[in-house]
Image (cartoon, rainbow, N blue to C red):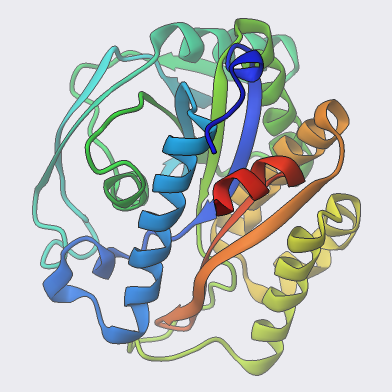
Length: 293
């Protein structure tokens, strides 16, 4: 069932999700059987979001676009180029992409971040190219490039608290502009890597990942935030947990505005070189029910 017409113009983050970006998902010939669940999950999630919640824009924070100090935000009107997985060019050697951007939202996020104490700059470079942490989930979530994309980086000097503040500002900015945003955290969970993509995380890290996912499924965002520092240290979360921390800030703001959230996992938990990967959506319960129909 599509979103009600009365809600179509209401802005804010209408759903958020953890999405996988393992480079072996970039080309079907490279995807092992145990990771195909992630591809299928992203395709199902993307279709559900596009057809039922009808977002105006994706805002994606990638673990593989890394900034040192500031938060550059993409303000290009169009994203067109070829993605190379620089760490594994044999897996993604130069795959094309062509998506619209949203310069107005990008610029507004920069202004809101700076006003809120999150240092930010506009990324308006015509030479900017996508990292595979952005490209891989977008190619499955929105394969026909129907919806514009705004990108955020993982900022090495940002604390967990700053990331949470940035997430809250994403929701506030989308609300002020009347944009219906889906926020995507492109990241693994446990991320203590070893050679050999067939290897799973250690049992204690898998259990920690399961506890975190259970908190999201229950919509228990406050407990997830309280437990997050211990979780990220135990599990060696990708980029120190910054993408997930930003998502938790988004989720906390969503819950304050729209009421309790619920989570739904799409597909199975899958390994890649010692990391744990999953696709999970987080939204108000009514929205999740619409997505299931």
